[in-house]
Each structure stands twice: as structure tokens, then as C-alpha cells.
Image (tube, rainbow, N blue to C red; front, top):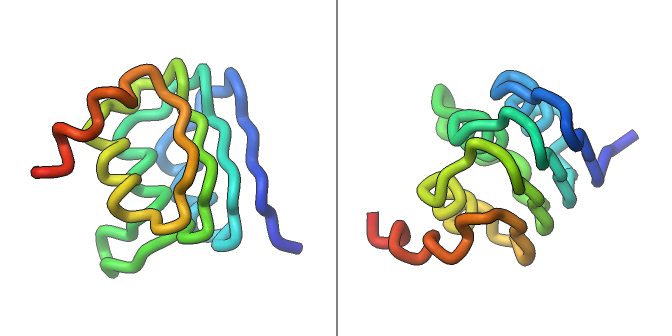
Length: 102
């Protein structure tokens, strides 16, 4: 079975959970972790394995992270790292372009 949609609205998802989603759901296309305690580290761990340098969740096309602790810098990383990402919902989205140069 392959998961293509994961929704954990108003659930305190920590980085390890998102890392496990990235590892175990390589075909995920939509992720909604809004209104939770998700941080930059969690988002990065979802899409990138720092130990091996491998990319994860490359099919992700829709990401909803409103009311989380994710910053514009991590959103910028997601935009650069996820080639199929077409939709992001987050309060700081307008601030993301300034981080593309970093």
C-alpha cells in the first residue's frame, strides 16, 4: 500500500514523525500538518536525509503547514528541494523569495 495523502491537523507532530513519513511514504503527494508543533527541522527531515544526502518525498505536490513553527527559510528549502511542489499554504509564504539567495 502506498500513501499519497497524510493529514494530521491539530496534532503535535514532531520531527521524527515527519522523518518517518519521508522514509516510509516515498509516494506521498499531499501533506497537511497545519495547526501543530511542526518546526523547520521536521520539514527538512521529511524531504532530506542529512546522514546519506538522499532526497525524500519527491512526489510531494501539495504542502499545508499553516499555524506551525515553520519559517520562511525552511519553506524556501522545500521549494528548492521538491521538484513537484505546486501548492504551499503558510502564513509567511510571501517572505520566502528573499531566502532563495541563501
